[in-house]
Image (tube, rainbow, N blue to C red; front, side):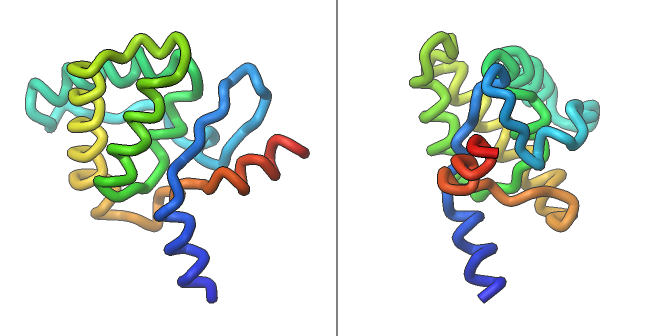
Length: 130
């Protein structure tokens, strides 16, 4: 049963909540920076773009500390691109997505227990009600 719950949590897209909502997710309490000095130069630039754009609506710690599969990151980025005032165009969305996938592979997949699986919309709704 525990394995099923973990699988469902990994498969559910992360619904981001604005910082102004005062909802704190477990991921928000984690580190809010990544050492990308070993990443290729284009990915280092993408990290800066990611940090700037994604921190407009939520803590940057949230995606930094979230585990997702490639298709989940794709849905996540597309969803965020459509948020009002995200300012993320198609080319920027692609850069952010490629950075998140590389970071998932290079950093998170090597130590998955150090990161939180994506929360479902239902779990986030429960946090909002607290």
